[in-house]
Length: 100
Image (cartoon, rainbow, N blue to C red; front, side):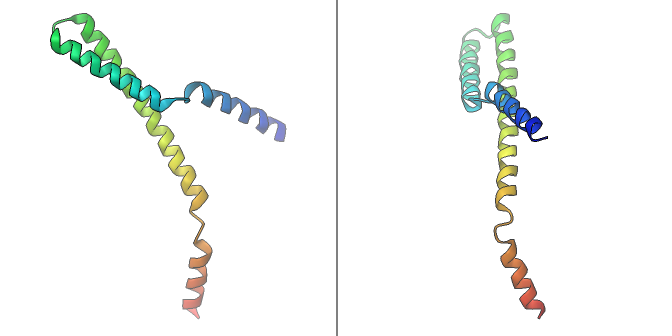
């Protein structure tokens, strides 16, 4: 069983490295691309090519933002699970003392 879990963990690390490495860079790059397309569209608002590129850039930006949100939610949950019990013993002791 341990070997199966170890292999799964290695595969998950590889998957994370491929798909989620540099998410903040991806968000920033897609945002800058979108800004430059907005500037180009401001100069030529009737260009269908630029409109299509802007739509694709918006989809790309939304995709990166969703990935970033998922990662931040996972990090928050992990932090809570690691640090939520730090003072639990202290509070239980206080409650027991108040009951006496």
